[in-house]
Image (cartoon, rainbow, N blue to C red; front, side, top):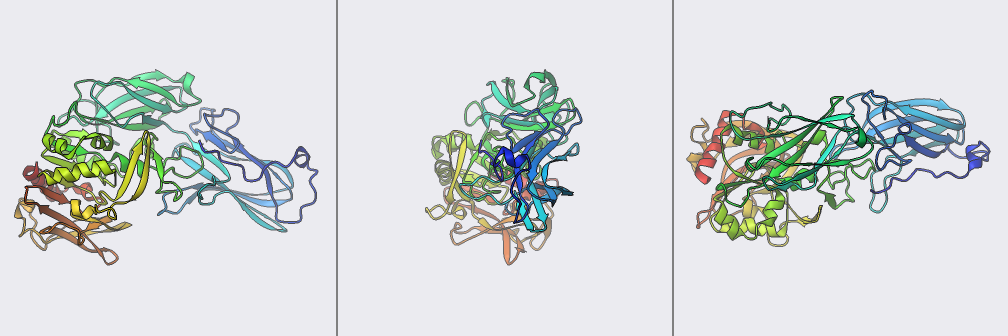
Length: 532
């Protein structure tokens, strides 16, 4: 854990006793520290306190202590940091006038405050000027100063991102509830019996089991599970429910016993899930990802996810595709990015599969995995990309750490040469409908959709792809969103090669979110029937 250092160190017991020399500059906060009232959680320090506001009398508040060297107005702000594209947000503030000497302030977070870390910012104003303590953007080689409060919900994470069916799986669980209920959910197919989890859309695979957690309320604890050998390859979630109603999830991919159990593989974007995960595990108040902190170039793949444990954008991306596969009875082999990287060669991938589907943004790909997919295509394998930003960054894994290196392209592997398109722009909230223009060139894609050239459908955007000079010869633009982000347009494409490869790319990040539209569902069904 990277230590979060105090803003101003103690300068001696005499100062705390009130015998400091007369202050001549702006007022100072000295000896700044924080606690939760005496029950520290694992890795708490004088600058980091864990709070769980559930009303049970244990860790319900954050208690801040400091010494003022002169009378001042003090404003305390609780700040939630975010990604680089989203400004931080003040969620709570307190303003008070204080005399010189020792003081304490208390933040009692409301029940239901999102579980994450929050930075504390202090605005101190006196007759000789003002100072601001805490909350600056992180800088390389320097920890963020100030105090941090970690709101503890239920942090759940598996030690690995995929397992073989029947293997023992290990999950780290961190919470301070007295009891837990643990249960597995999955997507086994249409008409699945059992409870439906409304957040994931998955069905119960096991009954709920209650665990006595009273001995584990001060730090993470590892629990071993043994999923059934009869479960098919797919995505599963461990759901953890506390006695006070908090929820936590951890995704788990069960890979096939051997490649090629089914002729279609679905590669879940587990690298992108963690790159988009703003969970702050080191306690400095900023997400441990390059999407929240420019100084970071590596991430820990074992971190629990924010939003109670669901990957960012899951429901409108990969989750929508997985739900569609389940509802339509499609049988596939599910692979994590780790499993794709473990395939020995593109020849092996081609022997196992006719079609490989990327349901979410497959943004971070290692050299070996890139070569495997490229060789698969060159041998006549077929590819479907249902999101945008695919094969954008080269990233390599060592142990549990994924390191982002550089964009693909300068080394002779532009994404457009493989995918057909590549990322050209991104902006949150930018959405417009697609305009069909390739129905006459590839009528089978739009058969039964009711769409023809000039028809519009859906509302898409946020991140967009388009063709480039490196796109394969003969590529067909099936539909376009004109000028959806500034002057940039999104393009949905399809191309085929002389050896029989066929590649479809949706061209927008959120294309899968429209799978509940009959026209879009039929379009994807047409692709599946032809390419699969």
